[in-house]
Length: 219
Image: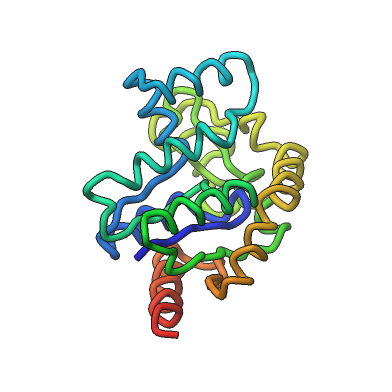
């Protein structure tokens, strides 16, 4: 299957992408991984992306699209892939449509993870990270430490990242609504959108997504 995963920040896209890709035996392709791989390998596209990133500017669409096209052309993606974080806007979606059409293939589904805005803010703004080890992550509501402000694992101080403040989260949501959400309408016009609730346990959401994708593929 060829799938695009969309949803607001805090919807759990990265987590669901990993589970779905494993269940469907297709590669999980994320823009973050593409940038890191191309930059670390010093590819022509990676060098161009690094110039913009180092200058504090957004990487142009054509660079992102070029990276995605190269990754989708690799052998493990011949029978399908799951795109996470791309396309990020309608221009990228149109470029993806054209690229796939040129290769004689098409998307099977666009999986839209739906989460109420207040829940997104609650999920992200409630995160607390250990200063000693960023892999030690807690949540004031869903996974609170035994002692407030103290890491259960190593006793380090827990803090809220600046990116996780409510103000920053709401700004990120505005960007999502303005730039990324319109691609849902773009793909809905093609009959590709499958919307599910991303509320509940991770496994519940994965099962819901798998069932919805099967129904969509059979439709």
